[in-house]
Amino acid sequence: MDEKEIGNTNITQEFVCAYLSSVDKINEFKKELEQLINCHSLENESDTPDFILAEFMVDCMLSVNKMVKRRDEWYGDKRWSGIGIIGKPKEGEVGNAPDK
Image (cartoon, rainbow, N blue to C red; front, side, top):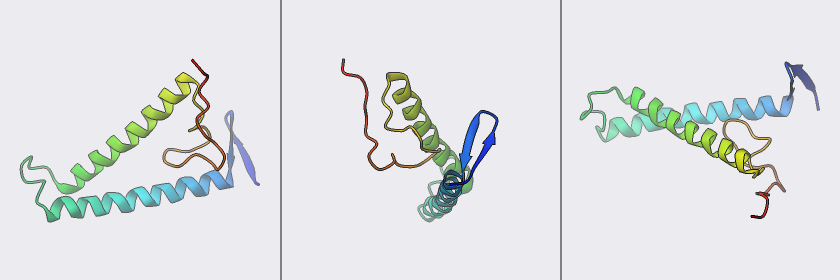
């Protein structure tokens, strides 16, 4: 696997491909969400363009994902280690928080 050192982080080609794939999926979802909001005229009450509402909602989802990852790291649960902004745990990775 090709690796490139950037700062103190090793970036693999696999990570970059997974990240770009996630970005594509997010952008596709955002576009579909924008259309759904528009289809149901949900932007009318706030008088906010549908694309701004869709972007806000996707940003909220990404923020929750980041918060969950940080929380789990804080408590020692490694189920989210090794993933990018959006993704699933790698095969064989499960929560391993210390017993309390």
